Image 1 (cartoon, rainbow, N blue to C red):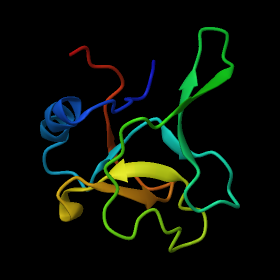
Image 2: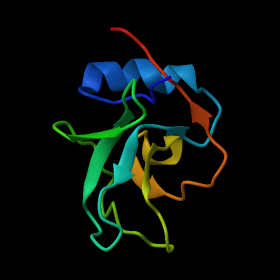
Image 3: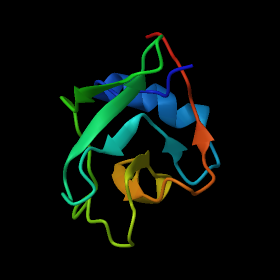
Image 4: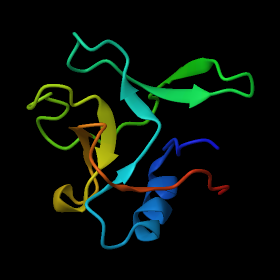
Length: 103
């Protein structure tokens, strides 16, 4: 199972409809270095359970994000309150998720 990676705007629009009514959804986006506010990558588990990191070639951060406002905001979460622009959120919050979607 692979958490979703948003590679372009068209893909993002489809995903937003999949979690209608939730306060955002989980992605594979995570903070690469906890000490660096803006160091996000896509983290993917490969078949042999080893993390593979991919750079964020497409981004859609909400103005002022990522900001690590509360300690440990290490996960990338598109949120409807920000018109699905991206927010750094706590990885322990309960949210909708999409594992894979072929476009």
